Length: 389
Image 1 (cartoon, rainbow, N blue to C red):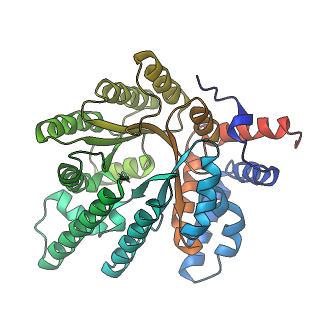
Image 2 (image 1 turned 90 degrees about the vertical axis):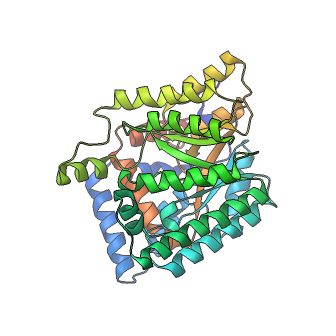
């Protein structure tokens, strides 16, 4: 069974220099005020076309991003593969609002799928639906508003892009993990991805929807979607996460005066997440493909134990673990060493374009209770083992 305390395995392919840099970056994340101001300055610098990348590239960029280009990212992918970990590539461009930008993002995603055909160390890609179409249009669809003619055309183009992407993934025999987003655009996301699954998941799991289990409704939605898939004769692809927009969700609910869609405490979230794991494992091999995308050690140990106890295959492509590049190496590489199918989500893209992603990553690390301290404790342990501290 995996031992998440084994730092020698976790950092076997990490140089002393990279280990030191990671250590100091997570030290910085302990200071919430500095992280907050750093994020604001980065956004301000982008707005005024300042060379923000000169600071970001040698520091936080290298920690959480695989490279600027696919060719540069290939070195990251190959290094991870030395530890038995496969890559999930994400052209991590966020916040675009024009049809031209959405077409450009689609072109990059299609290039990534073409690249995957020639690199066995990459198995999947990650996609945000709002990288392909306007958030505002999805918001209006969610509310049930009648779309203007121009908005309907934009929504139809979004659907067309998704079909092009999924068709290319089908040809490449790879999967697409579609990211979760805010609850106030959730219905159109679910409807679009259900349509994609019904079309492309007949024989293979190509399309995966994400279920944020911090939302009170998502465990029920997972079960509902599985029953729909069974009746429709297609495979349900499910990516299980705890959630990424908790503060924003609660603040919006309070501001607009509706009940928060988020569980009241962590225990309730953990309960739903682990129940979702059981639900998916119970149905493995029966039209269910799923990914446990979590940095929670208990959930990873629980799933690993259950796979072994139930006699399920450790190395199946339709049941796997995933963590973010730059974090959770003690989980990822120890799971992989123990024979479990494990992946890293690897963002890539031009430095100035991935700044929004990096700001979000820094803010999440400073706000998630225990995340930074756990990363620091693991890095400190390995630094001491190598006599670098």
